[in-house]
Length: 75
Picture 1: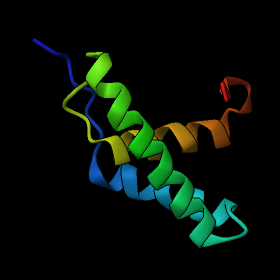
Picture 2 (picture 1 turned 120 degrees about the horizontal axis):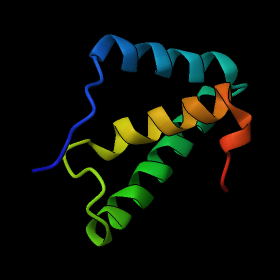
Picture 3 (picture 1 turned 45 degrees about the vertical axis):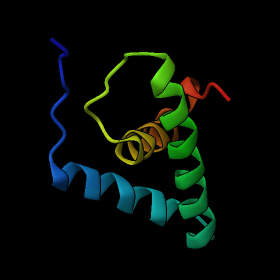
């Protein structure tokens, strides 16, 4: 059985608001989230990391973590 991290919708909204506030262009950050989610969706087929979490939510979480913790940036 897969273990699922519980993320409340309020936490996701807070993180997405952080991303929007930090971005100089709202359209650009939206496109970046969509591109990362699309990339993660294709990677998800190869790895069984957490298939229950939607790629868009995972992208928002990763990007907000990179914003608050710049030392974890991998790209």
